Length: 249
Image (cartoon, rainbow, N blue to C red):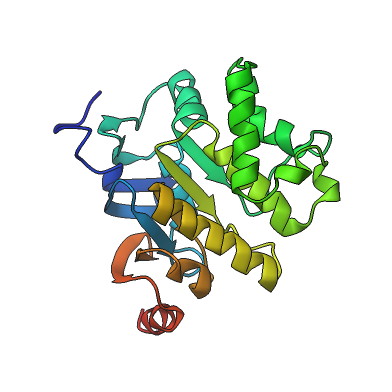
């Protein structure tokens, strides 16, 4: 299935009237209720909202970790809502990068081996992909710690490994789920600065889901959800602006 239009010029990621309902009958919960959203190529967007607003559900649908009840999702002009799990597995592996709050690193693998995981799962063990993993660790400031285990790294360093892993397959979009939620202030600042650099200097399309106004403010645009619907948006760049916007919703 392919959406209409030229994929090379359209949005990187787009949803149309996206809904997600859990349960049936009187106990049904409408987690998303007609969300339409377009994210441009090279854009950074933050998604915010109170608990129960639907932001985590939206992230799971964007990342092909769950399927919508209705509506459409396209990545690079190609629809993937409702497709078979085998296709979605390849989509997640090759075209979407994930950064998680709790890093999701394997404790028995070195930093470099953790970065290589998507390639290893795909059966790639060539020198080219290994060189890319090492280059990414250099890019995130961990070139000298490539052979350290996660337990030998700080929280901020582990999250940098996670970011390098997310970039290994040169994904069309990176989804970051509360990327600073498990970090101290100093590590948070470093990770946010890195994400901003990747977007500004390398054009990496980025979606951040966060409850932290400072994290959201690093994005160019902030979309607010409430009760499963888009409740407005504001430009990023200012933590104070985000706090005021949150107070108004």
